[in-house]
Length: 277
Image (cartoon, rainbow, N blue to C red; front, top):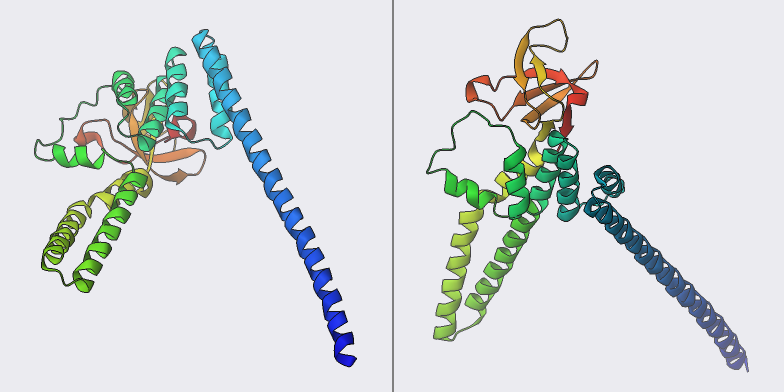
């Protein structure tokens, strides 16, 4: 009888637990469904805003189109097509510097986008510096062929390739399969060594240092963070600069990039004259 009573209590407890778990599961699925619906609704609204901005652009309402694109960018949307379209709207409004910033952002996400690269070359002022050494150009081409995320995916795929080939080489005894695994393993190692320098190189280009673009017409850079100090260069709108640091009083310490090498010295410009990529 005692065992029966305890069993009854355990059965009642188990029933309560099952009931609570059932309610918890229903609540969890309801929250998950609500979250999915909220995300789907948000994505749908973003698509609607993007389509509206595109309609403004097609109707030659470039100011309204740019405002729509900017709202999406400010909302945290990072998409190469969005940056490309916003850059086109800036060009139509005569804002070549801000267009260059947006094209640069598009190319960081989609480095093989020929349209963005062509438009950027069209609006960028002449640099006055010689092209890279001819033997250096293939390396620059390969570096810029993929974004940093794509290089990381390639590196991960090579690691899996090497691990699988190495495992087959250790576990299998068949001569033909072992020979194939050996060639795959060696090939993976060779490819990994070949691309080992491109991943950190591309990472430095995208995230290792700060780059910006002059967004005002003919900005004067100075030898120090003061309007009373001497002029260094007159930088055309659309010129790329490396941002070395923020100074007091709204000044930026920069190094111009799209200028002859002899002029790539540390100088200072007002913060509002530069937009970071």
